Length: 59
Image (tube, rainbow, N blue to C red):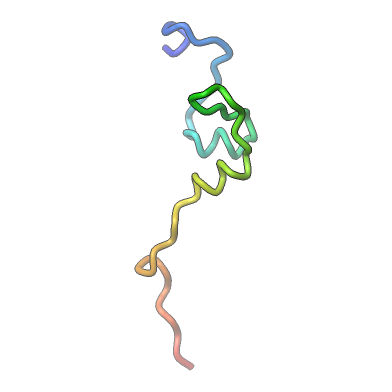
């Protein structure tokens, strides 16, 4: 479908942008500049909230 919209060199987006970055494929911002994969990884990593952490164990 994306090729029908006029895009070339289409890759699978099954895993989303995170998967795209995990496979270290090129990421380009809206200005057409390459995005550093490490910086993108930081942006794509979700923040772990305190409520998501396991409770502290007492001895």
